[in-house]
Image (tube, rainbow, N blue to C red):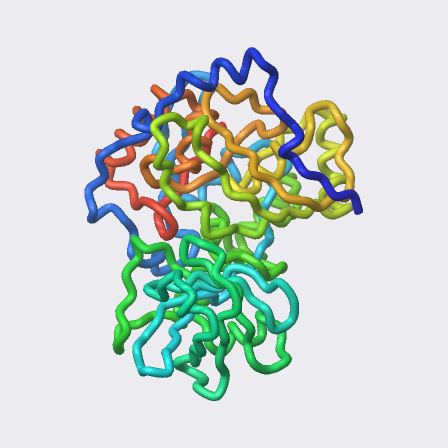
Length: 370
């Protein structure tokens, strides 16, 4: 397996100069709060689908079940098969005060990186003992502060993080989805629906949401229509939905995420490249994996980290079409969409989606560009 650090792949000087023109406020838009989906549709796959055709800049309003007829025989759909961990934690100090936490990574067995809200960052935090609300016999000890609310903690017991989180964690829904602490809490629902049906590799703290619409039946229908699919893995980190706070996009520091391309996916992508078949990225995470690969080089089994930031006027190397949800203003995700449609068209598409009352964000509706 080859390890790649894609930070070494830099844009050409002429392209780098062009990128300086993009301002973050170009990605702003007004969204009525009632269009932010708070729950998945009653049936998986029953979402709406906006189809944008770049060739003639046309927009068609459909259902997600129409997807197979919009694709071409021979297309290769590339999915992100990461699995979301129940990473949100409810903890309690020795004094009885509650602390909200978020698991970020397992550094080794029993040593985690976590985000702790309202923990403080001074020396007094080090050595603090926090018990898990739902399993008081298990605790974590804060060993080191890492800044910005992140800590290294030592967790009691000898189980891997995934096993512990399955019992004590809750699904890490984005902050715009509100779940109460009482009887209306729907973590059981979210464990099913904030997860793709093809999720395999545990490691994400957020879902690759474009994949949430797929059902086993729809996947079978795509296969019957002659549409291939490849699985890659990108473990979605906490920075994915972080708004861009810098005035210029070029000043934004992109988060780094781990990815893998297995031998089966590499072989299929090589076949597609040789035959000139279209590669369709299912979601921005799959798109980032694909575009982290250098142009003109054969695909190989590989793993590494990527911090690629895609925004206008990015020149796409591999992705010919994109399936995605509707994203937050001033986010890296909407910047990627604008890189595929052009900024003016992205604004027009989103304006029409709002006028047509599409559901936005993680549990919302979908858009096919291509």
